[in-house]
Image 1: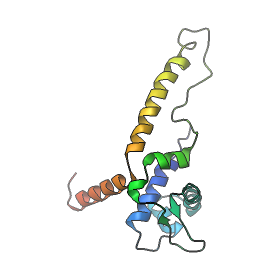
Image 2: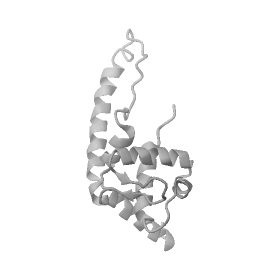
Image 3: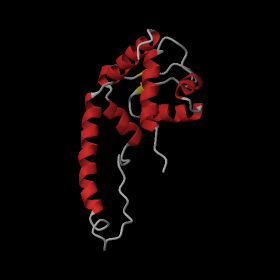
Length: 147
């Protein structure tokens, strides 16, 4: 089963747009940072634009954040990119006649829902500004050979 990277790639794109806002930001240059194809970047940027997180001009390499980074939460990005996709998936093909198989879905489902709500609450409390500031701190530490 392949895990989606749309959420993390979208946060990456938003941070890249803000950090490199004074440079030409083609989908190729962004794709080089994400290590994906420009087509994937354009597709994700389209989703981000449709959800009011970035603004773009057709035919130009000038994407901008549509809001201040402090006003964009990880929850905003998650809901834009993953929508109704389940955070955790239960195996629904279990043996109902087995003690474990007959109960695992209900039991795990409860814990999965608790974990999902905890994750979404955390996403709602972290802004893109927090992510960008942490990226810049990590980079400065790398430059000073700390780690």
